[in-house]
Image 1 (cartoon, rainbow, N blue to C red):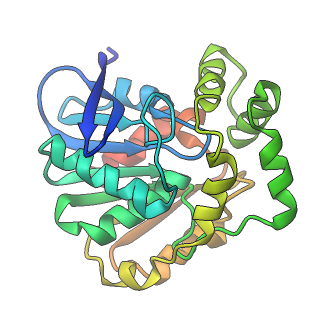
Image 2: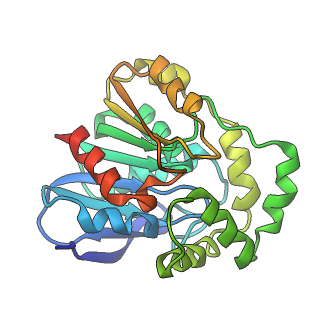
Image 3: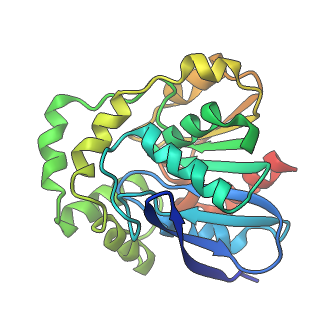
Length: 261
C-alpha cells in the first residue's frame, strides 16, 4: 500500500521552501534533494514506497519549483538551505539522498555538518571535484528557457528507460518553474566546487549509484568517490540511465533499504 504524502511550506531563514513529507508516524528521517531542472516531485515515487520506519522529506531547493528564489546561486548556498531545513524539522541522524546536482548539494551538506547526517546516498551525482560543462553547450542551455518541448526532450534523455507518461509531463511542468537564471548558473555552480579534501575526512557511510546508460555521469566519475570516502559502496546499474529514482524506483528502494539496514 502506497504511503500518503503531504505538501507543506517551511520558512527557512528568509525563504519560503516547499516540501513533501510522508504522512503518519515519525521514523528515521530521510531528506531527498533533487537535481537540475527538477523538484521534489522526482521523489514522489520513492516517498510512496518508503518503509514505515522512515520519515521522508523531499524539498524544492530555493530557485526551483514552488520555493522562493535565491539571490546568489551556488552549491554551498543550496546546501545551507538543506542544513537549515534539517534543523527546522528537528531531524537527527538523517539519511541524506542527493540526485545529480542534488548529489553535489549533499556532498556540501555532509562536509559542513556531518553531525546531522547518518548516511549519504548519491544517485548519479556530480563528481566530488566538480562537473565541467563545455562552453559550446551554454548557448543550448539558454534555449531551454521557457521551451517546454526542448525541456521534455532533455528530461527524456536523463531517464532513457522510462516510458513517456503523465508523470513525465508533471516533471516537465516543474522544470518550467525553475528560475531562468539557473539554466546557465547551475552549470557554472557545478564547475566551482571541489569537496575532495573534505570527503577524505568524512566518517559518514556513502552509497553511490550510477547508471551504465547515464550520458552525464560516467562510471569513472562515480568511482572517484572510492578514492576519497573511507566507508563507501558503488553500485553500477546496467539497465539504467541518469535517474534510477524514476526509471526503476523499486530497484532504487531495494538498494536504499539494503544500505540503511
